Length: 416
Ligand SMILES: Cc1cc2nc3c(=O)[nH]c(=O)nc-3n(C[C@H](O)[C@H](O)[C@H](O)COP(=O)(O)OP(=O)(O)OC[C@H]3O[C@@H](n4cnc5c(N)ncnc54)[C@H](O)[C@@H]3O)c2cc1C
Image (cartoon, rainbow, N blue to C red):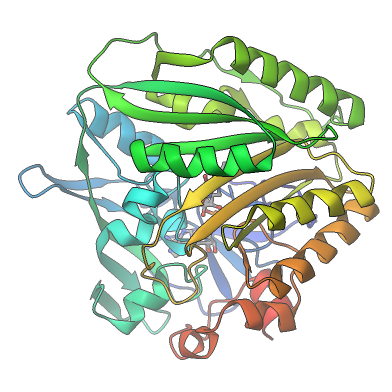
């Protein structure tokens, strides 16, 4: 049975209608497709209507090794696809920070990974989409179609994606050669990330915002034919008990920093440990208690001083984020009208929800709009209508393609 709530448990949901998708769109309420609920905010919620759970769309349809394409139904998870592909020395060009995401969810939020500087976002690697509209029409779309460009990054509002044809890449094995570098101060961090991205297919930086000077760890990777140990054993955190607070966050930052520092240099690890480290603790979001967590994620021009302003604002509010991650977005135009990625740095920051962090996120959203940046709607629950339309200039074009029966809490908050 599906539990309808977002990954952040914020905004809270008090009971919600849902049903498994069984081939047609019910008309009595507004509807919203629901994948695995790994979005942090209200993009995956339709509390005034019905959620259509897509786990019934669970087939891998065709693998075309010669031309490098895989066709799957939209409810198949990235985890299942990677397990299927990696056995055949194949992989997806773009994967997010968790495997528990469906293909429908990956397209609807046009997700990105550690490879954006080389591969763009998920939608750049989708060649065809089959979409069911509420009037019963089924559209076979390619990236030349306006409805395709509205559906990629279309927040589940253009219809229900039934299946998609995805590009796949060849890999030498399941192991990643990983390089860890520790860096100090914003110039070294940002310059280092840019240089690593020029040399490696996968890059990310972890930042420590709990100190007077920001320090970080750069993590770069590439597939290798070497052997590595099996993925980490999974542990479970099943109960909603708040253990995230300033003391545990400081301890966690210190622990993470020194563990990574001790592993500086090159090593070989399983792809699951490289791409999805958080998946080894199932239900880690419960550690934020019943108020939940918010992830604030923005993209902005590649200027270290913007990161410094974000850091200063967080300190002004006397908050310490539990996770800060920086990625380098390349100059690859996304396929979606409402896609998040654009050339720049993207910063993702986790906060435990309380009145102070809500006010802080509102302030950060205003700041990012002023510097020409954009907020990631897959993580958002606080943006306001005016700031939203300033950030997404293709909104009017998108509205032409929206399906009248498809609604979400995010859409009602930002547009209606
Ligand atoms: C630990 C963690 C790490 C993450 N790391 C990243 C990352 O590195 N990069 C990144 O970009 N994102 C990341 N995310 C966010 C996640 O990738 C997205 O929110 C993704 O869209 C979730 O997919 P889902 O299947 O859970 O969809 P849901 O969250 O259930 O839904 C997301 C949206 O997709 C729509 N949708 C779902 N299925 C369909 C369908 N069949 N047809 C039409 N619309 C559909 C829904 O209506 C909704 O609007 C992360 C999330 C977590 C929890």
